[in-house]
Image (cartoon, rainbow, N blue to C red; front, side, top):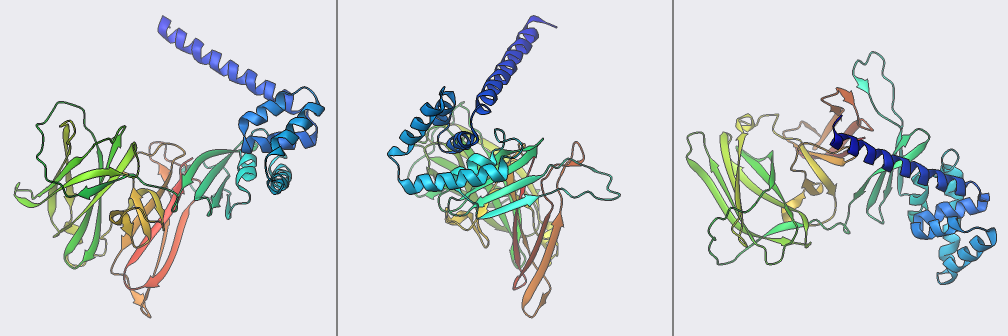
Length: 400
């Protein structure tokens, strides 16, 4: 073992020991409290974590009672009554085994009862060879807050592993097409990068709607404008279509910004050259993608991609992200971090109808391909009935 490795191991060992010591101190102080005080401490963790620690560190019951009264002295009494009602319920419902470790308690105290509470219990399958690695889970949805909380049980407590946002309160940074009169700067050697993914959807006879999604990570959008050029070439390198636009970041000063462009193409094989240029400093990058649309000709039945998305809801962000099911913000990478909720979106055409309505049912499971085991918290089954011979399907999954 070299000196550097030894120092790293020693550093991590110190961190682990420190965390264990802090946890033990917190637990020892918590269990010295009366049951009423334990409820108050757990409840305060949901409202104000610093206030909860101050309350826990007080030496006497008299000091803790005085602190609690002072905490609510400048707040409405109705809020206090609701707080105490919630902590009574949360303590009784979720604090039986590991109250200090169960993240459902502070979430319930802060937000109240969820609009929808889903409890997921893995089902064992007979003669099923692929290993399952699925733990019991709960999904709490709050429509009023536009939040969804994913809890997974570890040992005897449910830990919060992911929080999703949706609805009008969620503002998605995007790149808006604008009209300006300017010239492109000379290319520089600065760093420029973006991610891209492509979806193929059939909507017009003998034409395929090719959707190109781009994300750009930005730290500062001050005076920032992009130039986006998309060239569509056939296999003989002949230019079939070209589209150029100037783009301006909207709805945020930094973060990941989304862009979408739709092209209508005849079924064939194409090469796409996508160039993004930063007009502020001249940095530019080109990425090449190949697409095969031949399967979409002659009203083929299999005519849709499955798109991975970060959010699908009924809110409005920008016209370019609208789909028949609402707002769809696709992911531009194909690798998902653990605990990252994601959505699946697809369009299905040429469905057989009965009485003017189609009926489609999809059932699917998701596996860790490398380990060949199921690590999704639920098995998705969508049953959809609607008018016309076109269906738009959207569903959410979660990785453990």
